[in-house]
Length: 269
Image 1 (cartoon, rainbow, N blue to C red):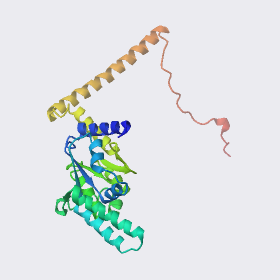
Image 2: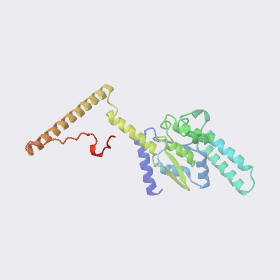
Image 3: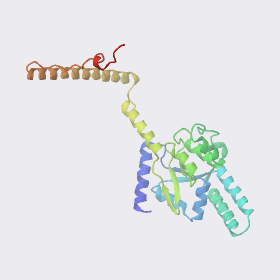
Image 4: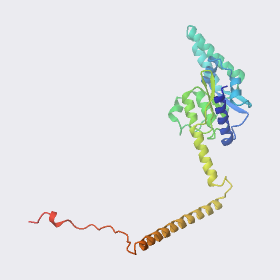
């Protein structure tokens, strides 16, 4: 693993370790069908690559029953075709499914939430998802911030974009034969920023409602006091300028609007 990628992975894991403590070893990696097919096609040793990327921490791979059914349906569909290309596709889908059966813990359908907040978010994209992708999305977004602490490995751009819009959903993807752990999404960073602001406003969560009210009262009183002091300072400076010019200093008044110039008006007949 190149030094730059290893350093980026360490930073990403540290971010989640500090801001999302539930994303801790043993890590849980949820693989979808596109990722499994890409790993078989590129002959990627997934266990070894995951181990290096996760800094040799303990982890486990997971796959949904829907993903296995989807790969089986694709293999059956490819077997109906003729020629070497069809045979190659069938073997690819079958090998990807077999890897999921042999190397991953299977998540059955009854463990997947029946529905989530997809009605409010990414509605159009969610309608276009396959049943397997819908299951992965619901698992990774349950609780609003990935309560089950899944890392999601996918090559599906639509699914990845939908998951990037939710906080604390780490994503793996393959760039040809290179395994990459994406940096935290803007949604994760924004969510973290809001949490930090909340902590500052409540003294790290240790301030009661009464104490918060007292602090607000003191802040308002200090603000009024600063305003009054600013007015007094302005009056002092004006008096000082008048004294310097011998008391003839005065504020210039704005001229009031007068009537129209009689010379420019049309004479009455």
